[in-house]
Amino acid sequence: MEKKKEAPREKTRYSDEELKEFKELILSKIATAEHDLEMLQQAVAGNENEATDTAPTFKTLEEGSNVLLKEENQKLAARQQKFIRDLRAALIRIENGTYGICQATGKLIPKERLMIVPHATMTVEAKEASKKRR
Image 1 (cartoon, rainbow, N blue to C red):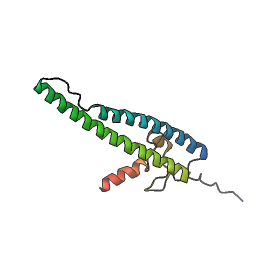
Image 2: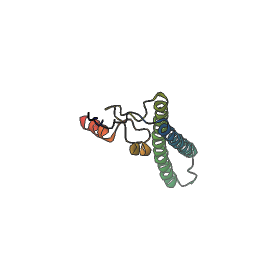
Image 3: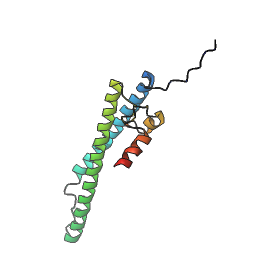
Image 4: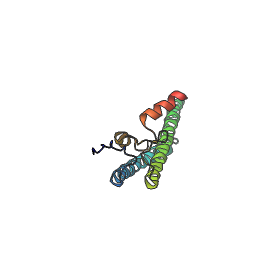
């Protein structure tokens, strides 16, 4: 009798060693992101009353510039906080065994994508498909 060759099974989860590698990457990104967030928050706090010129026109222009800079830093800080939140959620998925599994398809997200976007929850194809449906 001839033995049938089985097709290689599609991988359904990352190995513990791979998950450890992802965890280290995520922890590193969190540390960097928290440092960047702290810098942004200091910049926002440090922009208070910096216009010291006594000429009213220049003072008004500088205050307007400071307000815009402060608003931009606040937006960047909010994005950074969301990024940190998403990275922490990825750590939880590592702990509960669902990390790297596409929420839309249930397939494994390619390792290359996770190395670039470690907090990804969908494959590129699934993400693009969800954008088209909107």
